[in-house]
Image 1 (cartoon, helix red, strand yellow):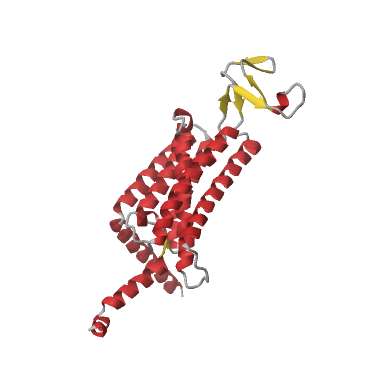
Image 2: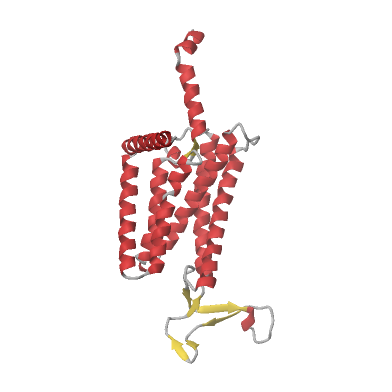
Length: 292
């Protein structure tokens, strides 16, 4: 029994190695991107450990875990992630976690966060559209949504993810005193609370100086605590989601005939295999004879 178990383990390991080698040969660019980014994150994690920046070490570990999500989806859930989309996802994770947080790109480049939230809206809409499209094509589910409702689902899915992420940022700021919702300096305030007569009419005042605990803050205005940043993030997420949803509408309407968009759409591996079998049946000598 022990020999059989060892033999099975060796067989599985051998099969896994063979599959990995074949996968690397077929997807050289993806493997190179994945390897380089992993090595960069590991190197950054070692440096943060040496500097005893354990919070940053956590970000590195989180990044390495997030890198494994596409492989998990492909191997466990049996959904094929196109190489182009997978590379974009890996770069997105790297840009947000490693460059944004560790290398402080969020501060160095003012629009870094805006760019990432726009890409997030685009990617989440692509994932949402692919998921509902897979259900549409699956014989196990009795649903058949029109292209409009598929696109609408993609849009709402992307916006929901964006809102949940803002909840996460707010929770981290409240519970752990982080600054994920970046602050904005504003130079005037408009509010009905400033009305001296207590009426429901807005009064606007210019902020010339700010004094906190007897100390003058020279920031050029009042520091807004994250509200403007949140609204900007949701707005650009909206733009990214809307753009892809419109594109996705025509993709579904044309039954996936656009070759370019196929690089951004998840597909079920079982559906791919059934399509391949149908194609093989149609091109087989038996079917050729039937047509003759």
